[in-house]
Length: 245
Image (tube, rainbow, N blue to C red; front, side, top):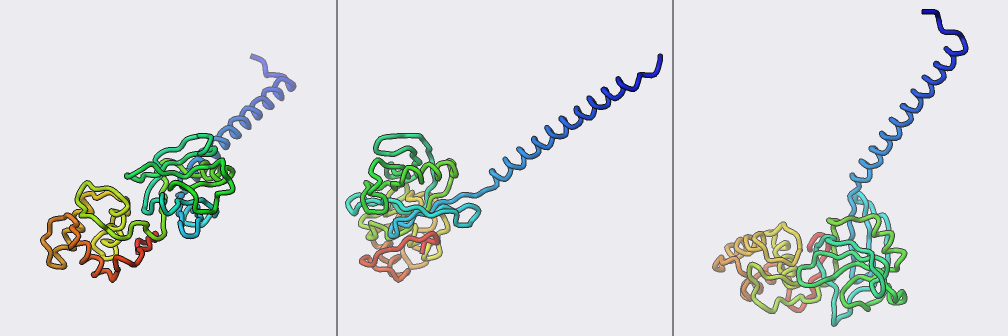
């Protein structure tokens, strides 16, 4: 077989070089996409809403990313306080604006959403939800996912626990019980508003500490002793912070 001529050889060399370049570029692009995806997945996002300041703070990897004004609940329809997560995302309209993010309050449906009343943002005006300007809620919507932590801090609207609480109870007053148990250093769970087995165990531990029959249910006697132990009073508003103190 004869040796290939100069021109055909050059053409094959050029084709080979181009092919290798295409393969290299494709490989680098794939690596870039993988790296970008890995970075996106590694970003930890958290929302903190301060009801008194009427502000939403968006954190990414524990660094403050952005602050947004929000409308909060009226005294007759207060916004929930506690430690929740986003459990639903949706593109809505009308009174809920352009985006909706439901939070995991067990005693009602509350969420972060846009509004068709932009003048109300930054005021005490809602039925408990957190209203944002549509442009702001659209940005937040793209940066959070289902499961993102949402901490709502401020004075708890029902500071007085007016009823006995027991396992299975849900409500804002359960959040207050959890807050007091955390202050007493017998509870390390979340301020979820759910009287679960962790709360029951914490109540039992506290009852044993103060000489009350360890039933695991928070009677009004137990609640009174808990207030006294944590140097709280039924009249003094309980300020819920991200540390629960």
